[in-house]
View 1 (cartoon, rainbow, N blue to C red):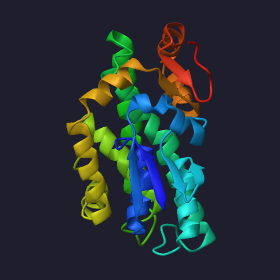
View 2 (cartoon, one colour):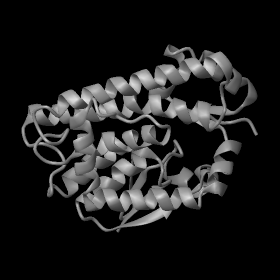
View 3 (cartoon, one colour):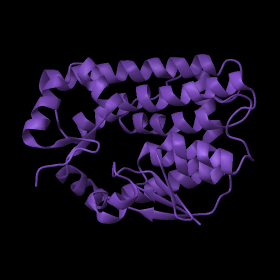
View 4 (cartoon, helix red, strand yellow):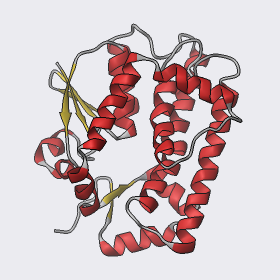
Length: 260
């Protein structure tokens, strides 16, 4: 039995869930609240206390990329990765761009607009920089779709699965591809028609509709900063957010013990 520890709105959870649904694998959803991330159950499975965490008959796999690769090797069909080495490498590079370059631009919008970590000129600067980065990724997707109907190639796969949740996150903050990127818009329509995507979107909507408590818990616990997020926010003028968060104890780093 597969068990997925999840917070449904997490883009990395959505990535893994889409892979599971596309492969038709049955799995138990173990939904967590932000407070549960500090609990003993998740801590015993994942030292980073992160979702997604997948447990397969007692064996624990962490990190969305590793989980998706594990699922591909465990259940090769339907394939989510291209067959040839070059095409597979291209898809994995796009997956990495989605997870480590696109994601932090969306994430910083949440930091500013939802968590209120910046105001005034700094908030305006970060919003502008985030929108510019997201627009650049829309342009990348437009170019990548010139040769095939999906980002992974001729069929829906890992690169599409990686990018889709981040586009959805950007849309929550009013940033969409616009009519000047017709291939991206056609791709969005194409992938949103898939049963796996519709199931995932329905679960995200349900989570948002009853997530008032989750939102308040998220505000009360330190936010996790790590690698690509920290690099992005520092590179785009957000050092005051990091400095103030460390001083106030409202941010943390993966694996670091917090003071009681």
